[in-house]
Structures are given as structure tokens and as C-alpha cells.
Length: 447
Image 1 (cartoon, rainbow, N blue to C red):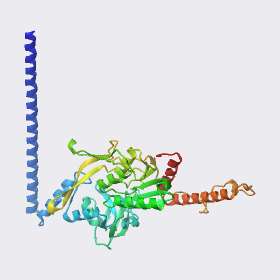
Image 2: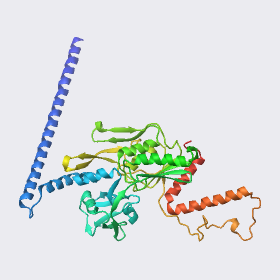
Image 3: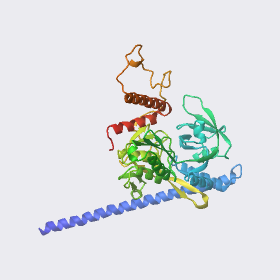
Image 4: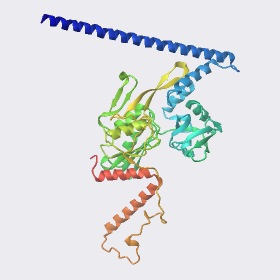
């Protein structure tokens, strides 16, 4: 018995020594790898220093050292992804003004795709929107000068200029069609982050961007419209229109989502390390009082717009309608560099409450509706349809049993159909959303 215990004890000791030896070997291997990595970094930095000195000493023209370093920083950041980049002091100041809601420019949100500048979306009521720029357009030239090969910030700088001056953008919209030029006059861009209006008995919230004005604009607008309709009981539902909304502040996306949720996670962000994960949850209080809610999105809905749509979709709080969103599911941190501006660095991905990453995938609507114009061949625009009914037949019997109230109701119904017909011609997706609200109310959804 003692003999077996001694063997067992020796086994434990031997095993401990064996595993300890593995640990030491692993640590030594890790230390060697770290040393090799460090040596490789030093070699690359020496290479950078050598190239830098050669350029300064033998390049055909004098080169400003600070310009070279800025270009190197810019190249290092833009090589990571389309949203990381270097912001010189003047660009950093412009970005800080942008989040306040007023700035100078054309009014377009752009990104870079395979070296090309691509329009994420034009902003409502801006020169770019008025000139006909569309989400998905590619900008190839600015004032006749090709911008292929430039960084995104360099291309944007080309489009900047004094307020009142004109700029010509060469646009590629369809690959099988010829490029064309659009001339835009630069202006001060004063964005109203959100506008609230009433359509029938539905409150429509049009959100154009997520800046510091967004939440107060929505809260104030909803309160005013509820008062205008004389109480919440007279509201049949809400529509949040996020089409062509390029995003903005993460904090505002969380705040807007929270307005329509009583509890649960809104979004989580996860960086490279587990310790960097953050979760944001809703607090009690639904401004819509659990009324039916529809969210409109399209290919120009990006970033913060996708956070709102994804959160409301996962909680089954809203019906998402339209076309697939842009698919920007990454978080950028702006890191100040003292007097040298700042760098915008992608530091995390965000995830919807169900754990979905929207990066490069986008939010897929519950109901896919293209923004196609309503085809109506009727000759008389006062009629909702050109179909022949019994009443149109020659010699058809009249309905002499209709009361005055029924005749009045019939006339009102015809007015509603005419209004719907006209609305489909101007905004088919919104018209569809209003019909969804009606359907949800008929079946008592969200009550």
C-alpha cells in the first residue's frame, strides 16, 4: 500500500516537473517571438529612416520634412481600412464643427471603395441633394482632375472651397453608361438633424444625421405633434425615416433607439481585446407608447442609422421597410494629436442586440420595397385607377338605397384613394409604410 502511494506521489511530482518544463519552454518561445518582432520593427523603422533621408537628400526638388511625415502617417492609416485616416489641424476643426450641425461644403457623405470615392448619401436640402447626387454614385474627377489614387481626405479637400464657388464633379452612376458632370455651388450646410411632421394620423420622423441636435429635435417635434393631434389616443403609429442617413454620433444612435424601447440591449461594441467590450442598454420610457412603428432604410442608411434599425428590429419593436442598408458596422475613435490634428482610427465593431455584426452585410428589411415610381396610365388624375367598374357601364342601375351619410362616406373614401394614389407617385416607400401602419392597427399589433 505504501509502495503504491510512493509511486503515486512520485507520479504527481514527475508530472508537475513535466508541465513546469512545458510552461518554461512556452514562455521562452513567446519571449523569443516578442524579441524577433521587436527586432523586425526596429529594422523596418531603420528602413523608413533611410528612405526618409534619401528623399530629403537626393530627390529632384526640395521637400518639406513635415509634409513627408504627414504623408507617411496618412498612408499608414488609410492602408488599414476606408474609415481610418489622418486629420490635419484644419480638418480636425471642421470635423468638430460638423457634429454641431453647421458647416460649409456640398452636403454629401463619402467613403472609399477600391480606391474610388463613393457617395454614401446626399444630405437633405443641401447643394448635392438639389443637384441630383445619389447614393451609390462614384466621383471620378473634381473640376476635370482625376482623384483616383488620392486618399479620401485628399479627395474631400479637392471638393472643398469658398462658399458660393462652383465645383464640377464627374459622376459614374451605372457602369454600362457614360460618366457625366454635375456642377454644384458650394454653400453653408445647416442641417436640421430631425424633422417631425404628420401624415394623416401618423407621426413621421425624418432623421437626416445623428449629431448633437438629433435627440432634442425629435423629442420636441413629437411633443408638438401629439399636442397638434390632441392626444396620444389620436395617433395610429410612427414612422422613422432613416433613408440616406449616413450616420454620425454613436451616443445619438443609442439615445434615439432608447426613445422607443423600454428595456434590453441597444448595441454592443467589441474591440480587439475582450476588456474593450461595451454594452449599451435602454431605459424605461417609450415615446411612442407602444404604438405601431415602421423604420424606413435604404442603401444610403449607414452606421448610426443601422444601429437604430438593427436594435428596433431585434427587439421586434418596429417593422423595417425599404432596401438593404449600407453595411458600415465599425466604430471610429478620434484621437487628438496635440497641435498636429488628430487621427481617426477604427477601434471596434458594433453588434446588434441579437449579436449580429452588420459590417459589410447591412440590415436586411423585414419588408423589401424598392423606391420605384408608381406606374399609373390613367387619363384622369382625379381617379385612383383606370379600371372600369359597374358604375361606369352605360345604363347601369343606380343605388337608390344609399343614405346621405353613406354617400358622404363614399366620397371621403374616394378622396383617400386619390390621396394615396398621388402619394405613391411621389414616395412609394413612405406610402407603403403608411399602409403597414394601417394594417398593424387593424390587427391590433403592439396594443
